[in-house]
Length: 160
Image (cartoon, rainbow, N blue to C red; front, side, top):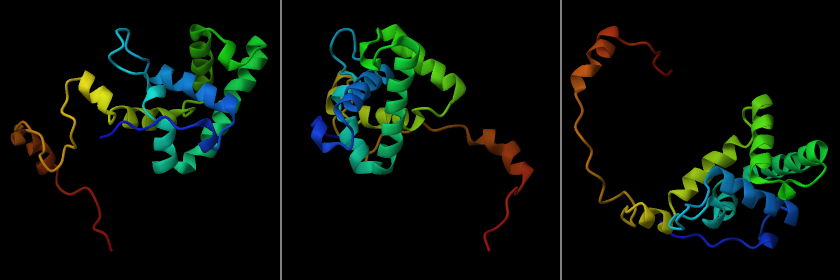
């Protein structure tokens, strides 16, 4: 659980415009807290996380960032970075309305990285440690609730 350094633009397989759009989109996914305690997603090293853990997403991400530029120019006659926050959100929402998977992997990886950042954990008053080996207290559930499932019996095939 460490605070990842924000990568320099020249370490990413993205151009400067794509990096600027990426920062805006990351802060749309998880905006900075109004009181300044919580950083925005653009400040927690998501690009470095992507490069380390999901490099296969970078070409898809680059194409999606380019699509935002193209759609912004087509609909608003300006770059995505020049739009007001509400216009940016409306544009992303419009694309996702037609293509629900648009930027979904980025959102998942962003949230994954965000809640690993020390500043976020500290602001949420969570311990700055890995959950294992110390673990967390797990509340005991009522296993009797599984009785209908057990009575149903096996609903799968054994592997060959």
